[in-house]
Image (cartoon, rainbow, N blue to C red):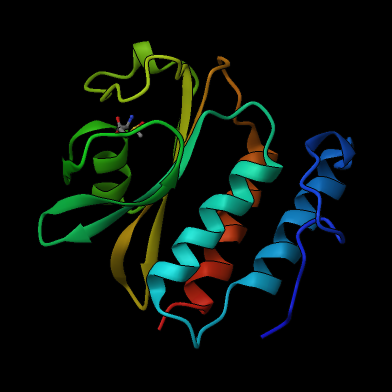
Length: 170
Ligand code: SME
């Protein structure tokens, strides 16, 4: 495992992060490749990935995982306010992404029928399914307090981030 420090020193200073989104996204992927490790238990990788995304992504208020157990998604490691603990597959944004096995981007959560409100600050959301060898393991959910926060570059980043995660889940 690479002994990697998120900022190159012991400080976690968000203002020192690159302003250029492409550079920031490259740094996020570099950190994920550094921290995630296939020899670790899955919970450690989910936990560090949620911390890395919360640290680096601006204008987000919640990031974490819902993990599949049968026909339900169960709250997994996350950063943000306490959240609902169970979501049926097919319900809410998370359950919809799990059912479709596709990324769902919601520009305005109030206009998504069946959206499940966990943090009242959330205004937009993206959910990326985690599919390993055809099996749905769960979803990555990211919420923002800003409308229309998640653009195509964010979607591409988060899908690549989930690919790094999948490569490191045993
Ligand atoms: N909004 C999600 C529920 C999870 S929270 O956002 C953390 C949904 O509609 O599935």
